[in-house]
Amino acid sequence: MPRSTRSICGSLVLGVQSSLAPARISRSRPRFGFTRTTVTAPALFKSARGWSSTSTQTTGTGTAQPRPQPQARRLLFSSKNMADVDTSLHASTSGAAAIYAELHSAPHALKLYGGWFCPFVQRAWITLHEKNVPHQYIEVNPYQKTPELLRLNPRGLVPTLAVPVPETVGLLSTGERAVADGSGPVADEEAEGGGDGGGQNGVGAGGVRRKPLYESAVICEYIDEAYASSGIKDARFGPGLLPPLSEPYARARCRLWIDHINGKIVPGFYRLLQHTPEKDGEYTLEEARAGFLGHIKTFVKEMEGFSAAEKDGDGGGGDDTAVERALDHEDDGPWFLGREFSLVDVMLAPWARRLFLIDHYKPGGVGIPAVGEGGAEEAVWARWRRWFGAITSRESVKDTWSDEEQYIAAYKRYAEDTTQSEVAQATRKRQRLP
Ligand SMILES: N[C@@H](CCC(=O)N[C@@H](CS)C(=O)NCC(=O)O)C(=O)O
Image 1 (cartoon, rainbow, N blue to C red):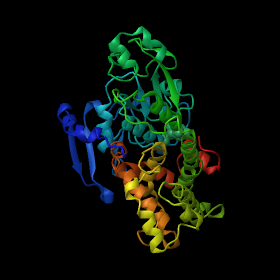
Image 2 (tube, rainbow, N blue to C red):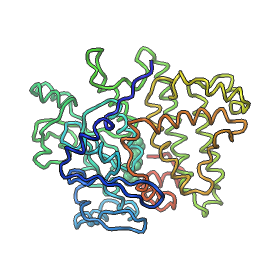
Image 3 (cartoon, rainbow, N blue to C red):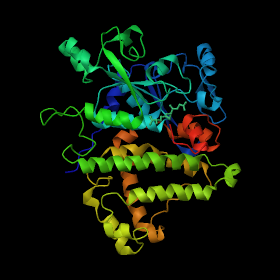
């Protein structure tokens, strides 16, 4: 049976607006024709320490940028000499993501340290949303490499998850136990002004111990396993995002295609986005685009509803019957596994959502053909469009998405290949992504 889509944010928007007493939600039409939604509430600006977003300046892109406070300026040149294009990123979420972040801004034993712009973070955020897991979202700028972030994650990357340690649960009262297993809010050390939950093996003043976890794919699997509902009477958390343990092959196959996303599609995305004319001697934009589209097509042919007969052909066949067959699976659901939404969909969602950046910045765009223009591969692209439409309409994806103009400003440094992010450096050197 298809799973019902839960809307956490959608159903809470009105409540949020009224509960944010000082909040103001305004809309304006900026450049690029996108509608900008800005939520202005002190609580929203819980950003990296030493980074006060209440003081802003306007850049050439028309995007309000935080003016670094003295402490932040020192940090700019501390652990890693990151380019200004990285350290001066917009400091906080906006649009729907700002509302979702505000809903999860109260201190909680389970903490997600993230950056609004980061697709790896969005994976973890989508998973928390899908599973309906209570947590605290803390916005940080990973290019600042604060001691707090490095203490939790020596790689200095987001997402980083601070996980309540189960061993302490037995020491807690019933209410605190609910908190430590992530099912309720906590008045812990955050209320005293603490920030990182005690770091590795640290004990907060509230007595909750936490351990860090990082790597988005690992975090998502952890959340899925740790917050599994234990039966029909315990439906606190959303459905599992991998096939059941009784289907080991199906689980392994999901991991196989997650590996394809991580090892082929995601690197192909950055290779295409970071292409500049100066690189033509090394590889052309056309080659980068063809490589990326090739990885997408390989993936689409593995989707449920793309038949074996079509897979055998070079692209599914462009004749009307093949296209109809590819589209004739409406009832089977649009997801990689058909009706079941899974971690495979989660893993690709953030980059699918960011494809418009390639259209925005690169001549010729992503190159995915419009309806009816896929030629011999129309059936493949028809199946892709069905998945793409579904994933970009999914509540968890929409609720963790900031205003598009903010992404356009943030990804300019990738499009111009000026960022010193670890992902970009690895892409330049054709190394495995961090
Ligand atoms: N493999 C990591 C990659 C995470 C990652 O690269 N995050 C970026 C933000 S999108 C980051 O923290 N960059 C900081 C840096 O490059 O120094 C994961 O899947 O979590």
